[in-house]
Image 1 (spheres, rainbow, N blue to C red):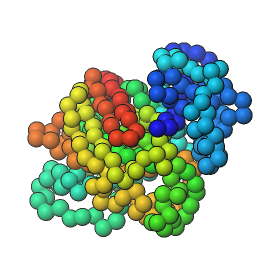
Image 2 (image 1 turned 180 degrees about the vertical axis):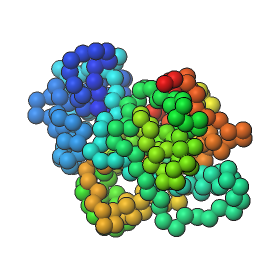
Image 3 (image 1 turned 90 degrees about the vertical axis):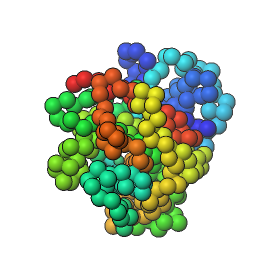
Image 4 (image 1 turned 120 degrees about the vertical axis):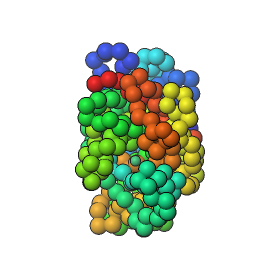
Length: 301
Ligand code: MN
């Protein structure tokens, strides 16, 4: 598996963010240390380099030059795209069991399937890295909650993309956690306010290229302090990734490096009996088979 990462030095250090490949034994191939390597700049440069750039990176990862190896423990991950150029695009209510659990909290017993994807966004500077802390936002929200989601990274621009061509526009897959202030989500009607709190979009740990994982058919899970809260499969999406890209791109140009998170399955905290909210010290681990785990800790603030 190719694991395309944005990283920096483990502690302090003067070098800025770089991109690389996480190798099997925890070493990092530092692409900035390979003369002429594609993507020596940032992840967007690599994405915009297209298939040739990705092929070159894969060849380097298969036979990494010794001078470009960073040993395990010497680096730490940033979000693969630390600051998207545009808002993170999101889909709400995209797994039937999650629609039903949400309706139950409002006393609705017969849930209706959404007819179209429900789009909203999170501001780009909500994005945080694997292992970064999530503020508890005490005094702002009483109902901080998690949502594990498959994240799609767009590779090539397109508008009015037909469903059958949608995956041609995808660069790869990663994991997102759509951290949400539930009370704010409801109070303001429009979801943006409850979905766009500071540091509310953990993203990572790396990008797996689109052709190395069938993102439409993979397991998706979330754990809080080791307790499994969400456990589903991306094949259960109401609108699959192809349909989401098709619908979002109607009259709207998707661009390389755009991030789309595709909805969360059942098992969110506010729908539990009794409901559970995130608390300082909670460890949240989001897991997608074929990608890995994205871990963050809630801290008082
Ligand atoms: Mn969500």
